[in-house]
Length: 252
Image 1 (tube, rainbow, N blue to C red):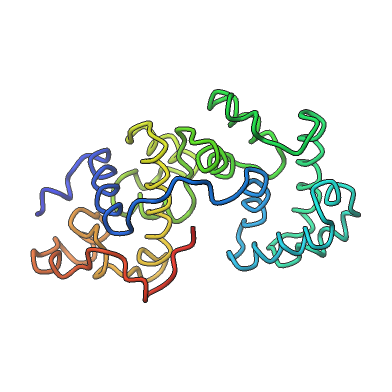
Image 2 (cartoon, rainbow, N blue to C red; image 1 turned 180 degrees about the horizontal axis):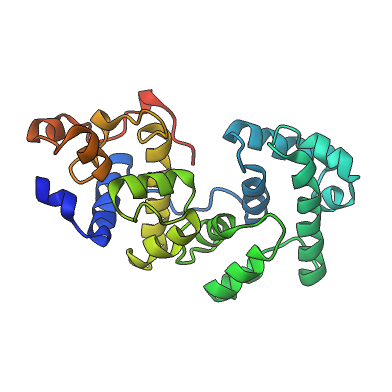
């Protein structure tokens, strides 16, 4: 059992995928949102709860009807409509600038041209937009266009560092490349890896007081080894094999 803790990072990354894929179950690859909604909703989600992000998005379109209406709206009124986000006064002008650029370049509010672009070109174009970082750009390309990219947010980053998939000094930004290089360039695997580790960070591997006894990764997680010692066979056997939905709903 102890030898599993010394596995190379790439081996831990693959073991993480295999175990969490069984624990949470494989995902339906059908996009959860339209590309435009994915882009704008993810922008609204920064440091904001899922509930407040959804509320802001719905209020925005209720107030202004469609993307043309959002673009034409007085910026202060748009900020008021999305007031449940963390920084509405910052996000409102960013949303309008993003819409302005898309309409000017494409003649319509569409991102479907990204389906035909190489990954690097798509990432560069998206991250040139105000407020769009590597995580948001990667989410759009992976979720909507099945591109071989890997979004890394704070949950995925925390799990990866604690398990030992990446080093303790690897930043969130750098982790996008490091983890991607350790996985097959397959959009389905990357989607499942992202969402499963996101859920794991949300529901088990908390920032404070992680629920290590219930963690299915304890058999090779550096954090578990440091705080509890090597997992015993009894501890591994006692770990739930699948997520108990009574403990919380998984947000897709």
